[in-house]
Image 1 (cartoon, rainbow, N blue to C red):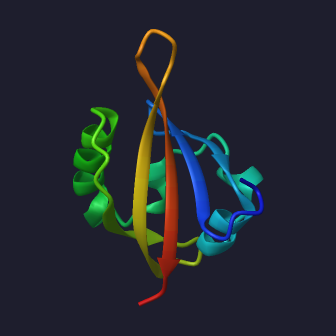
Image 2: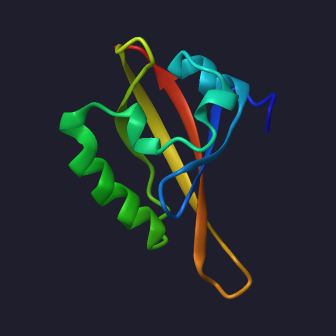
Length: 107
């Protein structure tokens, strides 16, 4: 996943970042090590948090539908992402993490 051309971001059930590849960090203007442990909502504009929480809840419920969302880069610039989130479950079937693949572009 480290060399994937898309950004790859793994977020746990509490919306905390557990993994980000170099490309995802580069797109957000940060590093993977800075992202680990951070709330995924830290990379959003305050006006988008409520909508993001709704999408996060839908994804935790197992929705396979992709969506487009605005992220906030470290420098404050907007970055639009085409997001394909895949819920990941433990052996008991409980949603533990989401694998998020993003193809991003500035607008």
